[in-house]
Image (tube, rainbow, N blue to C red; front, side, top):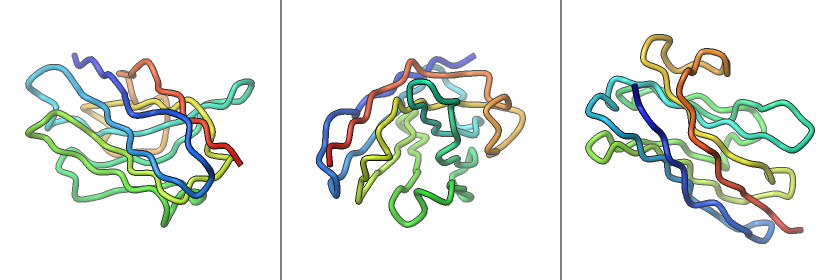
Length: 124
């Protein structure tokens, strides 16, 4: 089992950047595929990006392609989401999630482990 803690959220102006971090507990982080999801109040949580356990394959939702980058440092048990050219519609609570068995997939239900979330607010 792994526990996940996100950080790095905050308030930023449109066009600005933020880097989210998600630190995992335990010694087996390197065997987990990781994902980032986000949720706007009143809406369903949506997929943002995911990365394989080795970091060699990444997937993004279309709305963040070219602006967001997911990466990981297995030596530090950390997955990152670099967010550039932020827009007001990126405002949401961002969650990291992990799974050991399903790989880097876009499906929320494939991830049994979740962090508590970090708020990102982009002002226009």
